[in-house]
Length: 234
Image (cartoon, rainbow, N blue to C red):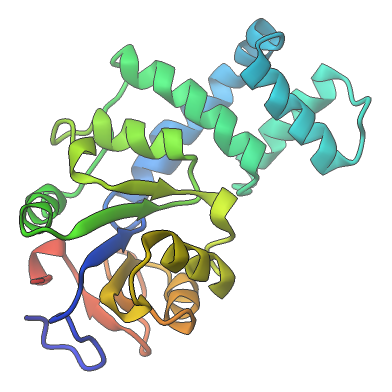
């Protein structure tokens, strides 16, 4: 049991976890995945621009720009700018997911997980807890990270994945949508994240919350805190 006020872990039936800074070192995202996508993006978009799934994302970028006739060069320039400024824009996340899938499959890298994560995920799944991911990265990127992780393929442990299509992570409405999808009482769902604003939004939607305070993370005061998944007993 976690000795933290405000958390009732006796009735938790589902766990929804963030990735970046929670299950995974933020440096993996910013120093491995983002640079890889930045380097690959121009050639990837030029080469595959006629494919329907790529065409769809190019059209979505033009919609974001409100420039339906924007050139392919302008689209690529915009995507690179979004990467450089770490913007959570849905078409960028979709394209990054496609490029990362290629990188994972070719063995260019493996998805980083903190050593304390996989044992707890396995334990919770074996105990009948439903496990979900909610990340600003695309669902495809999430599946690739856990499927080609440093701890092996963990995707069989998860019941589902959520990305920015469900809503933005700092808005309570997104978590309300997740509650509806899970068809569970909100207080039987535990949300794990390192970001206080995300935890605030989840709490506002009725979920239970727990902050992962990894190295470099500032602990908040409104949510129960742990430094490792090993400290979470459900």
